[in-house]
Image (cartoon, rainbow, N blue to C red; front, side):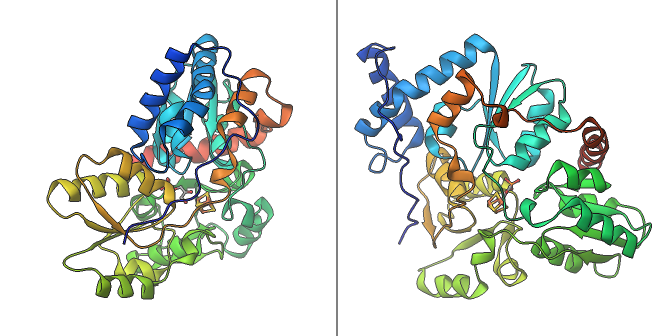
Length: 358
Ligand code: 13P
Ligand code: SF4
């Protein structure tokens, strides 16, 4: 039994195909279908329907020198149709910092677009879906962090990158799913405050036991909180032969104990590809559906993906039409603005992340 993916997004309005010839649309539709690699869910008619959108977005990007960044959890039409860079939050933060273009369009949830603005405040950062939040970043305020700092004076505070700019400004360093263990271990002292993910915090408590006490906030990712260790155990009984379990570190300790590999979205994709290449095609992925869709598109070998992925409704807010609209005439709420004082304090936090992660 394989994974079932979320519905293919339909354009909300009729798509204007008059700007392109039918040959251009056909060529683009074939390119999209070839890249997405899900011929049944993305038939050629669907790809033809969205081709005028991807063609127009790509033309506008070229004309206006825009760098389009998309997180792995965006839909395949965005990832393979229009993105210049796709990865996990750490790599995308670096890409935003290093992009030579003066305009970045960040197709993702709000905290990632804010992070791009913090690392490159002189650039224009467009975020097509300002309402796209995240249960982790929306579950903690700067005031919550100030209270913790009062309660534990002098204790370093690390925040998961899934936090607002205002929260980052209160913390000493950000960490991501690809470096939280490394960075937290390198922080000075025998105590550490970690916000806001209680599951990642619990993983830190176990990993740093005997070295550091970790004081944890109680936020969680509404997507990764759904998985249980019992589901993994059930699947292990159902699958014939060896099955490798890959999980994102936003999952509970119960799940992580069952996992053979824990890593960021990009690391999970690379591990799945590697497993396929060494003849271990049975994989249970415990994370958001976008990771599995990228594996299907990018793996050079046939894989059997088991379990049930969960969709992040926030990540799926953005559609090609929103990107096009934000490129043509961004509304004020689609242009990321952050107070200079918050930017400079959050910049220090992210500079520490880059320093300690490398
Ligand atoms: P990654 O950095 O692993 O892509 O994670 C971001 C995220 O929001 C996962 O839910
Ligand atoms: Fe936030 Fe979870 Fe969605 Fe990632 S998957 S953006 S952590 S709600």
